[in-house]
Length: 270
Ligand SMILES: NC(=O)c1ccc[n+]([C@@H]2O[C@H](COP(=O)([O-])OP(=O)(O)OC[C@H]3O[C@@H](n4cnc5c(N)ncnc54)[C@H](O)[C@@H]3O)[C@@H](O)[C@H]2O)c1
Image (cartoon, rainbow, N blue to C red; front, top):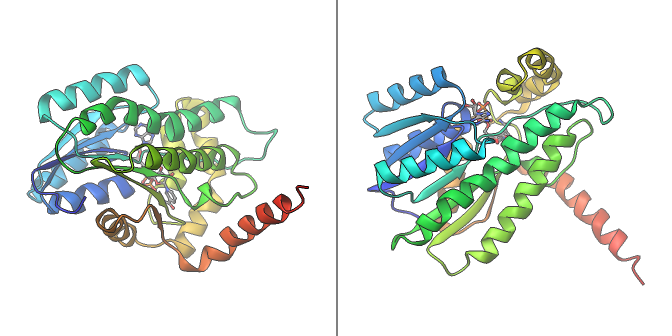
């Protein structure tokens, strides 16, 4: 997908960070955008800001991990905006805690948002996208954490590896169709991801979940790239058919080391 004039995008996690930056970049290129986000205040402010910049922006409060609510929002979006060409399955949350000390509720939260939210988006929008006689694109936000594991990142790594795997399935299923597929695999980007705990469904757990991510906030401060660097790569990738959208060139040895471990273990098969 290269030409965004008179197209419609549905962007989850659109009220801040990567989602909002993508909405702005594609809105500037002629896309009307529907931002879906769990944070009503941030959503209203994002909508107003984008409109003030001359972008046709709409907003809907949605927990992407709630399948019934998501089905209703998808139906409503298709009814009011007529079509969706670009589905950005981007809403995501992170936690940092060791195995054996990670509350089950954290697992459920991260899986619901990071993995099932992506699957629901595809199930609810893909048929309408396939029925369009226009170029369309599904972009899923995984992470470099979908290729490299780090201690303490159990739910995050599990869901991001799953999103990479699921995106590979989609790419195969949608090859030679009007729907392109790509998967974002950024390392640290300057957003509010380290404050994910603000959206924890258990208010009592929010502050601990947030404090647990403090080391990540420090890494983002030290190594984070500006969000617009990622967005430009993602838009270029849509145009040239690149599937994985990576960011930090220096992190390749970590990916390679993992692939080498897989290769070495596989070589032991007799
Ligand atoms: N920032 C990074 O360093 C980084 C790196 C790799 C991947 N990512 C991924 O990028 C995606 C976007 O995150 P970000 O970095 O922009 O962080 P962010 O916290 O700035 O934005 C995430 C947005 O998702 C929304 N959200 C959270 N839970 C939701 C839910 N249940 N339903 C709907 N919306 C919800 C939040 O309100 C927020 O607006 C996430 O999937 C994250 O895992 C981020």
